[in-house]
Length: 172
Image 1 (cartoon, rainbow, N blue to C red):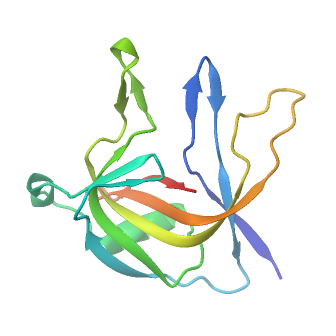
Image 2: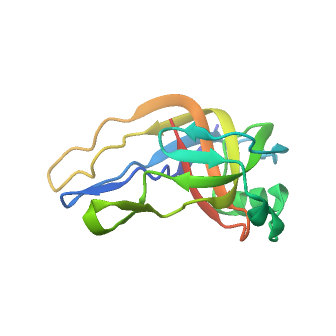
């Protein structure tokens, strides 16, 4: 059996005192069977929800909803063109105003302005995803990379609802 390895970047990076911390996570997918496109269960965010100490999902405002958006199906097509998903039968697509509280630009007084703040997005939730990764700092010359760790968790893939552009993924 041939197994392929697909990359899922969970965007765990932080610049502190000149040290770059990056986490790249991989999931394995059996490539012996032709992948099938998962069905989509669509919904709109109704409450404020914090996901993985990183992502805040809020109900979208009326003004954001009044502008043209791509469908969940189009957003999933764009996501799959860039990033294969683990083989699942169904994903949940939630239309929400998202804020990524972990990444942004450092401003005056060491304040952080999130890169994505109140962005209307489709958030694709993929449960029971087997993730393999090391995380931690990138090893320097002569240093050893951290050992791989396997986790089962829910992965979240975020796609801009106005442009259809995949933005980032997070999980575990």
